[in-house]
Image 1 (cartoon, helix red, strand yellow):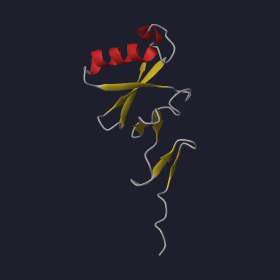
Image 2 (cartoon, one colour):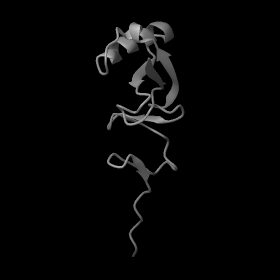
Image 3 (spheres, one colour):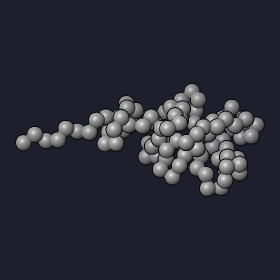
Image 4 (cartoon, rainbow, N blue to C red):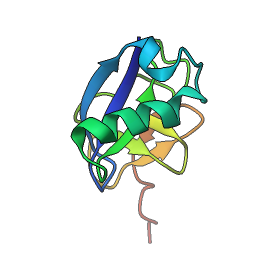
Length: 104
C-alpha cells in the first residue's frame, strides 16, 4: 500500500490516505509519487496538494503526522514545533529552542 499526505498551501498536513499499489503501477518511491499525486488530484481536485509518505519512515524522515508539517527545504515531514520561534534541526530532526538573547 502507498500512503499520500494532503497538504494545505502552508504545508500543513491535513490528512493521509492509502492507495492500492496497483493504482501506482507497483512502482517504488520516488517513481510512484507522480502517479499517486495524479490519482489523488483526479479524486480530490486538480489544485489539491499531495506528497507520498512512508509508513515505515523510509523517506521524508517520518510518516506524515496529521496536524504536522512538511518542511520543503529539508524534504521531511515533522511534528509541529513546541512554539512558533523554535528552529528545526535537520541533523537531529528535533526542534531546537531559539538562541538565548545576548547578555549585556
